[in-house]
Amino acid sequence: MAKFRYLPMTEQDEKDMIQAIGVNSVRELFAEIPESVRFSGNLEIPAAMSESALLKHMGRLAAKNASFDQYISFLGAGVYEHHIPSVVNHVVSRSEFYTAYTPYQPEISQGELQAIFEFQTMICELTGMDVANSSMYDGFTALAEAAGMAAAASRRKKIVVSETVHPEARQILATYAKGAGWEVVQVPAKDGLTDLEALEKLSDERTAAVLVQSPNFFGNIEDLGAVEKIAHAHKKLFVVSANPLSLGLLKPPGHFGADIVVGDAQPLGISASFGGPHCGYFATTKKLMRRIPGRIVGQTVDEEGVRGFVLTLQAREQHIRRDKATSNICSNQALMALAASVYMSSLGKKGMQEVARLNIQKAHYAKKRLALVPGVRIVHEQPFFNEFVIELDRPAKEINRELIKLGIIGGYDLGRINPAWKKQMLIAVTEVRTKEEIDLLAEGLGGLL
Image (cartoon, rainbow, N blue to C red; front, side):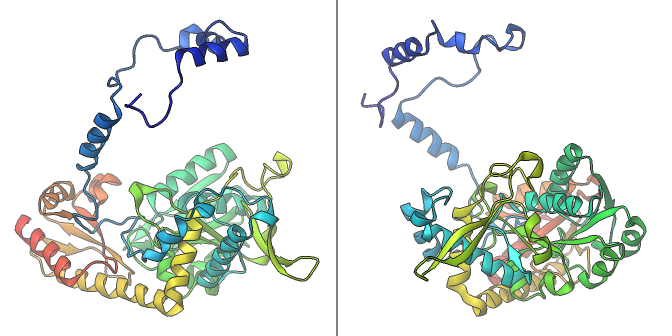
């Protein structure tokens, strides 16, 4: 037993359970599955290891990862390396938060409920919207849910989405659309932005919503004022996906007349963590509040007049008839939402502005510095936040392979999306990058090109 930290199930335990169930073997439990579709033979997996051997093995595998601790990262495309104040992990590591799941009983869940309420409030302040829900799985599913909400509210099936929206978000939208029977129409990009002429032509009275992202996938800032006029021309809903950190400085989508604003809260104190778990935010207007997916935490008073927090809106299939539900999302990312809340609270309004300003300043320095490197061309000359596209004399895949040897994680290889862009790379520069690190990237590219 020295191999284990716990007592595993013994053969006798298995016999006792089988006897209690009333079957002769575990195999009988799967009798309903036809033999023709059952796997026969042995799985090609390694033999079991002792705990000490397994820990060493996993440690060796982990050491192969190019982590932020050892490498300088210029990789973004939806997940970013930002400074996370130590207070964030201190709070989310408290057992009353990380073991809490669903605050159904308000009398014993006031801390969790208040944390979610504060998250909703700060998201509303950032986005300029009236109401926000208590978070969603991630930014991409939040965008797809926004399309679903627009289709339900307008009773229309056509969704118009810009090609400058993150490609993975568009893939998830397509998955939703297949089941829901929506028609998804993509608006082409022009010079790194949504082609407004094409958007106007593709939008009509059958359209439920226009979906754009700003800053968009290429890092460029869309003309939301111009998009809004087209989006509302036929009483469509205007949906914006936004990096919440950028809203520390940029005019919020709500001030442009957006009906729904979504995004991923990962830049707000949530670690990259190999792509998750993260936290989607979803904000909308009072008019559309009752159609919002997920749930909302509200503030009230008890019979003695003391402030308290409760779940006020739960329009999902877990609580009401399935055909009346606004969404089939049955959970939220409360712990990640808490991390975002602590992050925003610790920085404050001025801190959020300063971090956003650092992202802009450092990214713009990087753009100017890389433009001086022979063999590097800046692809778009548009206002941008903290990402921009460069074109190289060699395929980005090859360059990234060489940069790793120099201790640098390069930008996102756009050839993964479109073979015609195989020499293009999306560079992300956040507040944690230093001038010396940016110069090191420039020198590395200069040597490789």
